Amino acid sequence: MTVICSLFSPISVAFLVIILGYFLGRIKLFNISLDLSGVLILAVFTGWIFVAIPTCKSFIDIEEYKSYMKFFSTFGTALFVSAIGISTGNILDFRKWQDIKAMLIGSLMVSSAFATIKLIPLFDKSISISKLLGTLCGALTTTPGLSAVCELKNIISEEATLGYGCTYIFGVVATVLFAQISARKLNSFGLNKESKQGICKKEVALNGLIQIGCTVILGGIIGNIEILKFSLGNTGGILCSGIVIGLFVKKHFPNKSLLK
Image (cartoon, rainbow, N blue to C red; front, side, top):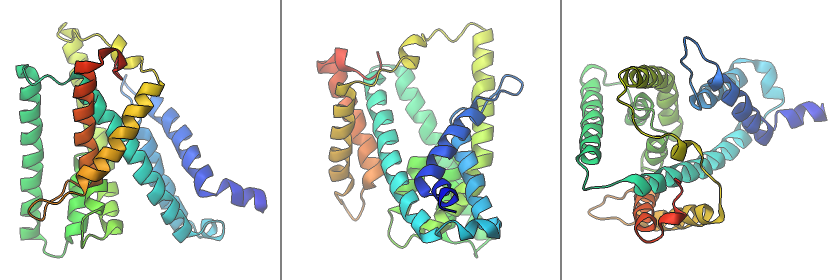
């Protein structure tokens, strides 16, 4: 019984989901795979099993799981967002029209999704704002967005997570399919001239850890600054500080860049 309980411990389950989800994402069907999104999809399925199968409840403590998973979520999101922010700062160039155009297109996509979310309550007034915002984050497949939503006041994090989980699976499958199909078409036309060598060979080095640590600390400070009752939150603060640090490192210490 002790061995079984150890296998069902939050740490064991978390790493088991990561390992199995990684290999799930590597499976290719018609030369298309889920990549790292397989981890989250498997995690959603695992959580459903724990609730749906009564036998599992005798081995786990739901409240303990919630506490552990909240910590894993906060810690993992901080690392993920800081790495994305620094990497973006390393390659972002406001003098290039391509970078500016990408920002404008992304803003348009998010705005259209927000407009759709604002229309839903007109037809279904029973849906809560927590679940609605979670649905928005899931449809956009933005895990940092969910983290930011859960930090808001008067938001029920369980409902936001539920809305996120329900739409994320469909959102990520569609996004992965469209992205990989588009990339294959670009390659077939010879339009993808970007070298993959610098992106695929990331080295975990001391300077990278220092940059991530500074990003998380600075982002926590920035995210809690309120201006006109508005704040970026920890996730938004970490992302912004990561971009700034990435730009600073690229300009003054180019050999210390996370992307080599």
